[in-house]
Image 1 (cartoon, rainbow, N blue to C red):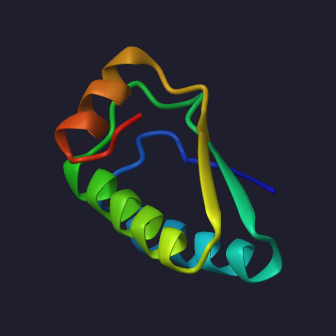
Image 2 (cartoon, one colour):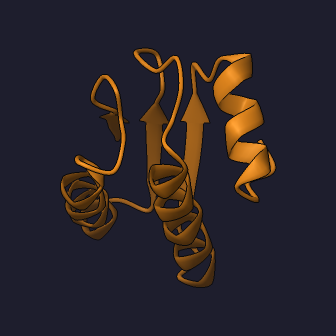
Length: 83
């Protein structure tokens, strides 16, 4: 199941993202997050994504990332995500 991030994914959209992600994970064991519209990611959003990833790992569920550009990869890495 794919979850496409809103353009300019940042602190204003984190709550909706987290709700959407949890709903998808209730329905499926794997969620693919599509970063195709992202040029940058806000640190708060990256932190929430990392938290969700760790939570999924504990629940034996999977989050996969696709279409992640180099700038976003670097930002995720700085937030503690090993992309």
